[in-house]
Image (cartoon, rainbow over all chains, first blue to last red; front, top):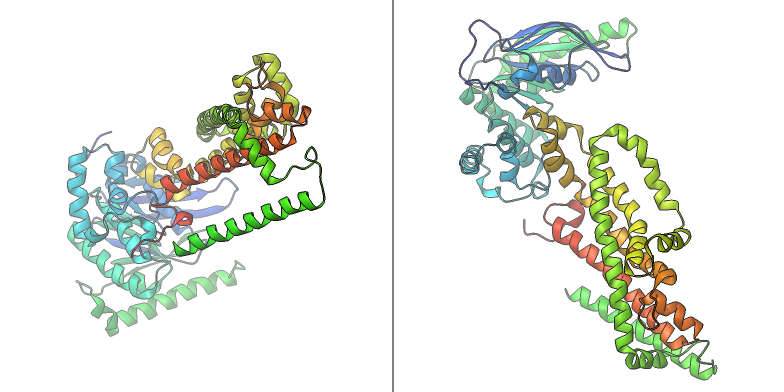
Length: 271
Length: 263
């Protein structure tokens, strides 16, 4: 497999491009219908919508874990399967391997890619330092809190030096305080590492706080209902959540989301 | 620790009481010793025929251990194959259930006919009885891995072998040990049933199962009790060894094996 320099971008190409993508499951259900969107380098795009709108399916299409039924998906001009080296996926729940210690979990990707052990050790130590997990390096996942587990999961994704990070409702199971803290940390990493991010969530507040752009999806079948740019100033901190501009955005998005849902109910869809 | 000591002490007291009741009942009711010997007579039989008893015990231990260990090796290998090829699993899995339902007493004479008298047929019979729980539990563990974990491995371009040995196999460990625990308990039973049919060709040379049939024919009821006692202890030791191995390999990480760790 050709390994790309992570800093090299094919000029003019979007990081992620979907063209008329539909996804039909084997049981006949249409999960996504005619989705076209472009994500440019450095964007933080949130996907928001009720359950069943195909948000997670969209992430799987971009990561190449499942093929599109029709249309095309390109990641930096390549097929998703060929672009896996550029992508890290952070799953709902931390999905750590319980039989591995924190440091072994973080080093998993490098191990699978057969990076030499001494090099691996160095990068794992540096990464644990970066996300503040050095103290618990030798612990097992069951000894950690939900927030800590998620931080391990982020460290594991980060260590492969991805250009694109896909997150599938990563903080859904956490309490609000841990969630807010991890959101701030995620933004810090996003700015430092120059990622492009596709973020699936149920939470309007979270999506507004994090995103440069928000895509609201309608359900049955999943389709793009609205695209909302979020023009809150950078850098965003805990203070940002207290500003009136932030609140206005949350209200605006809530209204849009509700209109999408009631339109669907009028069509006789499932409310 | 103190609580454990209490438990042990309590069980010892209960055991002593039971033995005392047994001995008194035998004495007061004048039960003849060829029907129910008292615990003192059994103890005497253990003492006088100790070398013979140990010989039988070791022979049975050996046969049960060979059967159990080979069932683990073969069972895990079969489960790995089942986990890798779904169609093969669907094709052959029903037969492993047949393996579990086949009456061991019925196939024991067959095995002896094929392999001949001696420890190997006994070990094979123990092997057959141990195999199904190992295959069933390990297969279940190998295939019940969370989908997202498989996706995580795929995102790193993991090979099928990496997914098998770095993900599926460690995930199956608790299941495998559950299978080992079940099989360890029945391995001794399988060996003894095997020895009923194929103990030894020479008197006094057989394992526990052979000695049990021999003693009951000779109406040496006190020694028969000693043999049953030895078989029970052996079964318990196998089971305990299985539990210990499970604890040893899993206590660090597995939720159900949580030891009290400082937090």
